[in-house]
Image (cartoon, rainbow, N blue to C red; front, side, top):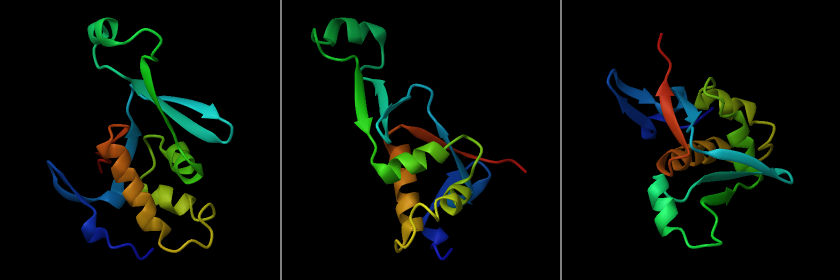
Length: 126
């Protein structure tokens, strides 16, 4: 793997940690459904129940849905709260067969999932 890890560092209480050594964990409020071969993520439109009751127009879904494409589905399926980003990249080598720079694409995607609140990143102790 020739990914430049210095670009992808996270600050923790223990100091800087490479993103490749971080463990992505799905957030509990995110639902996962299947639509054909792809995953559809769902999350509440409003954070609080009272907001949903008073602000949600009739007929509108209380959830927002995000359909992942093939590569996003492959990454999401490997996020189990135990594997590191490095392990996920390694397991996806066959899926991204022949594609240049897929490691960078996966790390960028993981960071986007984190920014959007679908996952959080943790660090293994020990």
